[in-house]
Image (cartoon, rainbow, N blue to C red):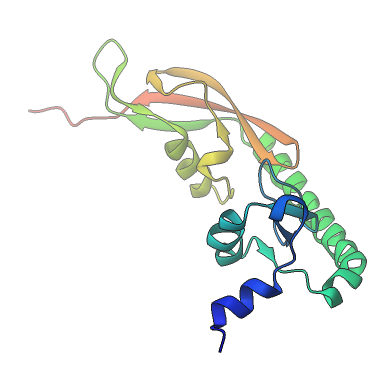
Length: 173
């Protein structure tokens, strides 16, 4: 009697070279867009894409419905694009972000300001920007005004000015 795993493995469609054929339910970097039918290595499909919910097994019935699914995906993508464009406009309206950091008298930071700090400051202004959207060439180690590019996804970019200032310390009396 075959086990559940053996039955499930038989249901997976094989492509050329024994690779798995899967339909992507989300965009996967370097693999494809949502709704694409892709071929991946069996381990990558079983151990990453399927458990993470990034892909689904295309049954014969699903392959017939793939065109309808692609239409729904296109509508969802257009809605997401509209949301990202609104977010980009909101970010452009922000004159600059001020981030306080511990620094010495010359303006050199004791730590650094990176993408998570910028993301946290933007989230404080109700702008949903994740740290991986912030494109810094390196971390900021000196107080000053910096232009930071944001890649919001779907080739939508924005730019925000970040002012790093020394943290105010209470002087001893």
